[in-house]
Amino acid sequence: MTSIPNVNADVLQHAQQQMQQDLQTALEAFSLPEPLKSAVHHAVMLGGKRVRPALCYATASLKSEHLNFAAVRRAAVAVELIHCYSLVHDDLPCMDNDLLRRGQPTCHAAYGEDTALLAGDILQSMAFEILGSRLFDQGREVAAPVLLRQMQILATAASRMVCGQVLDLQAEGQHVDQTQLEDIHCNKTGALIQAAIMLAAVTVFEGTDPAIPQLRQFGQAIGLAFQVQDDILDVISDTQMLGKTAGRDQQLHKSTYPALMGLEQAKVYAQQLHDQAFQALAGFGEDAAALNQILRFLLSRQH
Image (cartoon, rainbow, N blue to C red; front, top):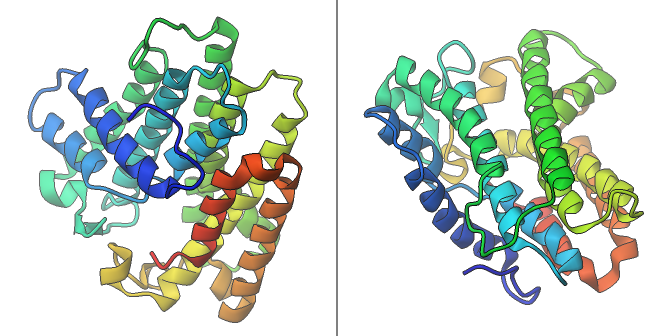
């Protein structure tokens, strides 16, 4: 499977299948000692929604002619590896101290805190190695300026994610207003989601194309909406459905949207953010069918 999904197909299911294959190929390209190899496989290959790769593919589908899909596949793998590293580190005892992720023991619960820490470390460097490699290529190279821009986008997003995590830790047990809360989550969660979109955007569009700011606006809205919905699900869902410990935000005294504005108002705000995201895609018409399908899923998701 090496092509962008037909918009009539299930975009997320296609992304999950493609990503499992590509992640397996990517991991096999590295020679890692045990138990690090097993810990990395545990962190990466146990499933997940693969929303970020799906957004990467769907953005590329906006302009599929003359597309170097290998570059998009590498970008999707890279952003997912950064995401997996962040989950491993978020779950560590010094952070959220969680024992369940994707319905399985967290990486440190399975392999020990030291190995989990190192697994997260190497996943970050692996992401950039994959992005700059020729993996999946079939004779076409990425122009150097495009690759440089991809590297900058991913590195900036990873840095913003870490800064957002710091702000999130500082906000535990504190009263923060909506501006402060959005500053946390536009970085902690939103930056990497927006990066998934922009990694594909700079691959398929010229730097001055008017699509670039539209997609950036779309990424900002959907990134924040994703976190608001996550906060809501932590309240209304259960551990079995989520695949991680439900109610953890309240246990850790996290600053969340339901805590700030109430559950019902948080649901209204999530809908407003999704409406903004849909509006940002309006100019693309039917070409945005795959992105719109992902948006509809994210608004109605239960895990």
